[in-house]
Amino acid sequence: MTGSDPKNRPVAANDQAGDTAADEKVVHWGNALPRALPKGLRSLNLPEFEAGWVWLVGAGPGDPGLLTLHAVNAMQQADVVVYDALVGEEILGLAREDAEMIYAGKRGGKPSPKQRDISARLVEHAKLGKRVLRLKGGDPFVFGRGGEEALALVDAGIHFRVVPGITAGIGGLSYAGIPATHRDTNHAVTFVTGHMAGGNVPENLDWTAIAQGSPTIVAYMALSHLPQITQLFLEAGRPPSQPVALVRNASLPDQTVLETTLQDAVKDVAAAGFTAPAIIVFGDVVRMRAGLDWMGALEGRILNADPLGLKTQDEDSA
Ligand code: SAH
Image (tube, rainbow, N blue to C red; front, side, top):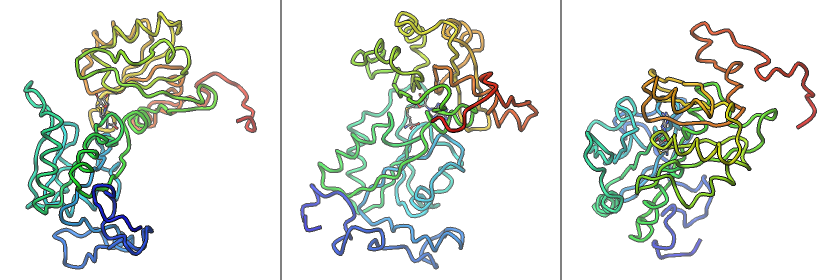
């Protein structure tokens, strides 16, 4: 690569010799870091967090075991960690003891920091030559405003790296025993946000088209608008008896799952006192849970090997 303007080239600063991972600077763990990765992982040559860079890192849905090695590597090198509400204490505990920890989420009913203030903070710390880790729940690019923050970095000429994370709408559902796709129920899945900054359901979404075209719909930030969303889906013709599952605190020790139907969802959520954060999945794939609730099985649930009631399956049909 020959580009010299970092504004237009916010990727590896040390890649003049080429673009391959082998050309990246690597950390020589030795005594260089306060807490080195376990011996077997050192051979992976995970990248060095360079001073003045920002890494946008996904922390997954909550279970620390769902962090990527890149995320752990980042935590162990960062000077500053700017984290969101959905990132738990155990994960934050992986940061260096002397790292500056900055909370950038909503707390105690106070308004959340403005997005541009968070972006400005990332830029400010990076310009001071800090290694800035922006840690977000799930995946930074899935309803996480990672794109906006990254563009602010591009605008300021700051180098950055993106570390994907396991998103709640896939990994969170797995912890409830619900696959995002399954060939007997759905070959497609749609991820939607149920919440706009202004507090309404997103008006720029064609809810009817989604309801009619997508067998499985996974909704983030949708709990407070569940009455509107279920109504929109019913009006669009989805069957009232279609299964719906809500997973609260997915992958965390207090994970709770509520299985209901489109017509009963609002009533059942109220009766259960179900609260956010929850991921909601609409579609027949929810029935798979009777066979795949592996966490329930750990507590004695008997799993059904034929949850959809299909006696025979043609293994060859895709
Ligand atoms: N970037 C995140 C999503 C952020 S939006 C990701 O990729 O997962 C926040 C929403 O994500 C929450 O309102 C909820 O719908 C969902 N969410 C995130 N973590 C969750 C968890 N552990 N359990 C259930 N829902 C979760």
